Image (cartoon, rainbow, N blue to C red; front, side):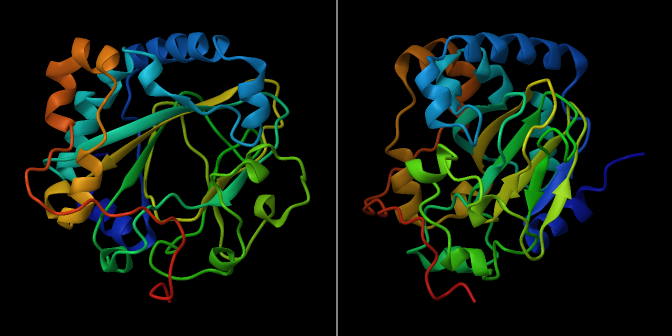
Length: 278
């Protein structure tokens, strides 16, 4: 059955996410499993203590091979089929929940809540979560609140800083940020599936109660970069890729690097939604 990208684009706009099934082939999956296993093995124990809720939070800049995933032709082809023919990319992380690990806390990752564009349907920043194993509620599948990228939810006003230490360490498993909440849905996937979602979307993940790791690689793209306000473009373009990662992969990555030639001042990031989110 062919993928209907028109329906998926509508779902992305209205619900804030869509599933791109079977996008990563078996050969690439096998290589990514080997690469991420090695990246995880290199981390110190303190890394996992600080990121107990996430499992790991390892920058893809630690591994040059990840450039091949960022510019992976099936991913770029899927973005083009969704209508995003000139996407840009900024960063990514290996997020791997070990066996018997706690839930990932509820959060959203948007950074531009001080700009009016964040309160519109404009596609600003999206995550692409590439799953290396099958996921279910038992081993830590994704949880989402459809529409929360455009509509205020009670969590928006209650959650502490998602990028601080309190939630990452998962020191209080009874905290409401880990619990079931109104309107949430589970999104189990198969290995090789990719979940695309708005950075503004409230999302979390179940605990991994299995005896095996549950790994995904989350990549951050700006699908409509050229349409974004200049202050946001200026902010994104000011961030350089590490030279020791970028230089060997220049041919692959350069077309995806955000660039800006105007004179607008970079926006100051703000992760907290304002009153414009109704």
